[in-house]
Image 1 (tube, rainbow, N blue to C red):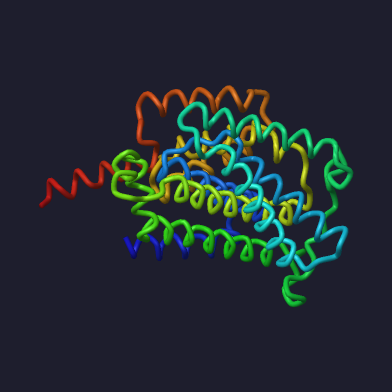
Image 2: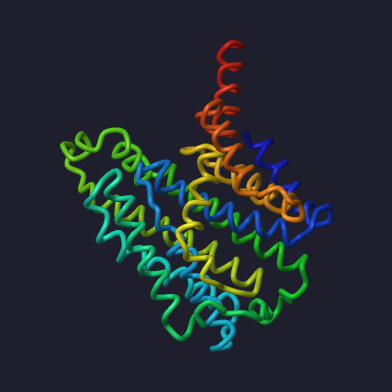
Length: 307
């Protein structure tokens, strides 16, 4: 496992010299977004249809702070994360007492309300969005207008977020979240205040989604309504399901696959959404654990046979 992680890190460090850096940065931003969403659905069992609220909200907060207020990119990114966490606290407080489809519908409704607010308030500039966001210099030292420098900063943000998810999942807090996912009534009978743990996980997931959204705003230098609409929430659900729910690497694989496919088919006449839909149906029928989940299960079976 350590050898695979080291090899993956070397590959990520060398990637911008082989592939288009902006495409790689897009993959990293959405991979972090999918990891944040997977923290909620994969380890708590809560399906949120409103996660674009935190992703797009942080993009707006970061873009406005950097462009209008002239903040350092890092300060703008931190504001985006705090704003997403605050939104997560509000949405989570209203939705967390419901389960299943009711929880999903509440998050969807609140997400649509937030998208409407973003359309109306002046600082988002309506349908035009916030454009021309300057990348600037990180801490006054690193020129983010250099694609290679911007890539390595994005990679550092992704690795930080990925490590945060890993640490949460493998902590005592994460073990309680898994217990709640497996049998919530038993967790309640053991004395755990389940709603508080759910709310904590929801806020953490929202903050990490905000980290991805804020980084995306700096990378692409804009924040638009597309970032907060329900289609973005559906897209991250698709990425997570394709990669494998409840696995750390699955959302990364799913996000990279979807973004690469969208980029490859962008210049073709074939509708991208149709092909992605077909692939999704095939994966659900043949790879119920997702791409990464099936590969990991296959490796476990081989190891058990060797033993």
